[in-house]
Image 1: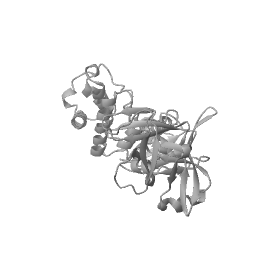
Image 2: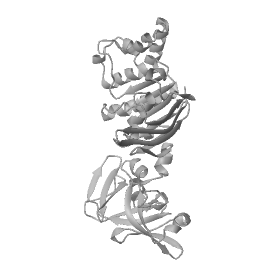
Image 3: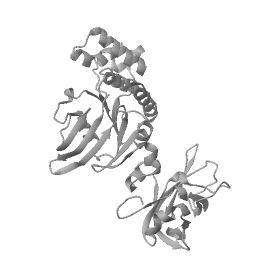
Image 4: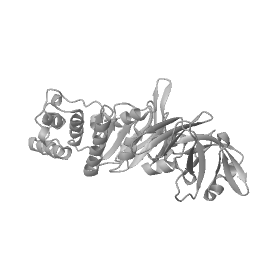
Length: 365
């Protein structure tokens, strides 16, 4: 296993800068998931770690060893791509063993490593099959097995599940998590899917336009986002962002929203937001914190009445979508809630879960 340290990683493609001085430290045995929209630079960063791409500036350190100028074969890493890249004429055993044979390992050592990886991944009964005889999920497990048998210092995953259907992606997420818990090799995993990031990561790295917006455990990013981008990217459906104005009212603060909606800011948040009284902000609240008006504990809640425009029954929940002066707003409700398009619906906003965002800097206040 190994520690990975990136310092000041810059990458230019011609006159275009795609990575703007990336600093990141990955601890020994940690699984880091880098997530972001297409084009944010996450795969380029992974390729720089792998040695498949050379950085314009900065250093890559693996176990205090500068590998910035080394070829991929000299870095002691293993990479799994979204393309399985299996040899179609070889059996599963030979696909997994090929890299070890090239390195000149003893036949018995190769057999042991392949069998251990096959047992871990549930491939023991498939070792004599060809790739064409396998399902997509089985092929991906073979690709993972080929990486595991190398016993590298570092695993790199580049969107390995993007070619699988939704059900198989869920299954393979579980498989990858189990493998990491068993093998415990330092892992960097790249994806555009925030659900994969939340479920797999020890820490999530959120990238946007070639910079790191925030790094932290999944729950920290979910409940305490640092920027509007992180708040909107993490969570599905994404957080609601509603234009609002902070007003002082008898020692307390209130939020004035479109359509005459006024929400009381919890007393515990008054000191935090006091300096923003009289200013325009964005009021952020997740759909699950805009809920049915039930006779439960309503401390730090505020009533809201809206008219649904779209209703999406999801089985275990119902998503309801509204508009406030052109701003899209979503709420997550109990499936038994009698909601109807165009009919006023009474909701409560859980204000202890609110966020205020500076619209000029996109920073969470």
